Image 1 (cartoon, helix red, strand yellow):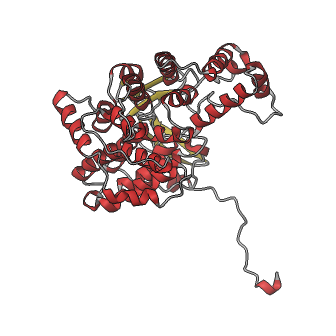
Image 2 (image 1 turned 120 degrees about the horizontal axis):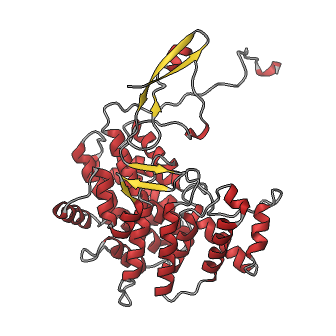
Image 3 (image 1 turned 30 degrees about the vertical axis):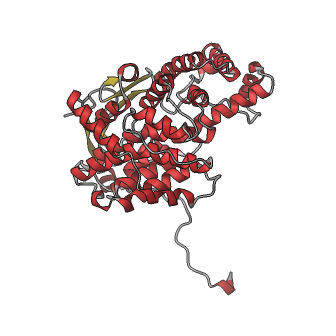
Length: 427
């Protein structure tokens, strides 16, 4: 086993190296404070691995994303979302029997308790759907007290199935409430994405048949979002779960983390930017110039990524999906033309190339969701639906790891030194 030596003055720590099967290895710094009297500082934890993980591998420099070793390109092209959810949570692709059982269990759990309607109806009609979803997810713990122990594998299994099954229904019902439309119940004869589309867009007054084109595109988008290592929301799930909070509370924390504009809200921001460019006349060069001007607050949304310093592999797939969906639905969207022009600039202009500002996963997803009929404030909710299996897999891995500890980061205190209290009448 290899080692790294860390020295401070006459003291040293011999840190054991934890070897990676692919990518960056790490070294264990857990004894640095007790030996050297120092802590590490890593803003944003960009160089810190809380633990080893077997779920997702990302190589930002090479533009690689793999779930359990499988390239995202193969999974998006050939896989089914529930199949990928099984893979993320159990480590292997299911065989035919396992997939049928898993899919059947999720289908049978898609109904919500009838009185959950009152929870949705307690919110204002203009409430943001991410806040509704986070609250409803947390509330599920009160409906299922039989499955709250994060160390109980059977409880974790049933909670996993319940969450994957019920999240589409919660999302659709919250939308129906906000739209002043009747709730639509799940249909067990439809596949996962078609059932979700039916609950979202069907009404009692007329027949509705979910489009296979849209259902397939949504399946791909959910797979592309299913996991992405220890990002902000997944880390939030693990942090809350490290205190042995139940999985519903932990996933609710992940939803809240995802709601921020620097994380899950980026696809909505991209659409708003494209709408601004189109409304201004569609002159892409004007807005590219504004983005290059360091004194102009305008930013081009959907370019660059905290991890990827190459083309986001998910963006390549989503671009192809966007072309197919808009063509097959007969949608002529001027925002797609603007998006393509921006992409050409980003791939050819030295300003973007030198800064490695390539289009990311958010760049095209909003256009696709818009073509499907989803309102803009639901884009982040769809991100949450896709990311759910990854959150559950991250929670499972952390909860069942016997070496797991409650998260408790340190700080380097830089405030005032020791001071004496002064009574208020003497200040």
